[in-house]
Length: 115
Length: 114
Image (cartoon, rainbow over all chains, first blue to last red; front, side, top):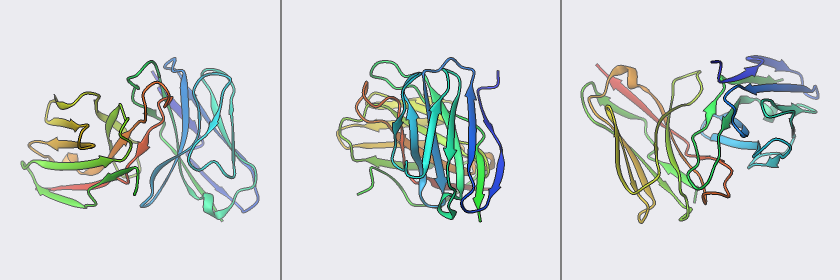
């Protein structure tokens, strides 16, 4: 059982380049999320998808786009990378139902450096 | 005021002691509360979830929730060097409308020394 799989693990980009981070989950979860983690800032939500076919902005969406390709896959795209987007990116998924939210399950992360 | 605040740390305790990690949150209607552990260079992993006032125990870990005081804590009994990590408190807002989105505290670094 792989859980949440992210690719790539590491990436170095030059300013202005674009790239897509891929994420797939095999836990039949309905909701998926992209977070970034920066020193001293904790984890901050970039975008989320409550269900297949829907996406919404989180706390820090500027400079990113997402696609919920199907129930399993949720990708994050940087159209024109900037040094401020240097961070560790985590994809997560959850089965959301009713009042009690289920915990998030995280992928292993992508360490992105923009020079 | 940050939405979720944790004791700033770093926190250092001797092996075998109780480590106490604290978290306050600002959204009064928060329904779901989680503690994650994150080792350096790794992804967060769930330790405890708690939804109702009171204590919840799982092995050496006890989570305590007080919604009136908007306070959630994590106690680690008989701390081990392997418990050395960053502990993240996470909170959702109103149940049913949060879509599982978690707001995280900035984390508390715990070091357990032999």
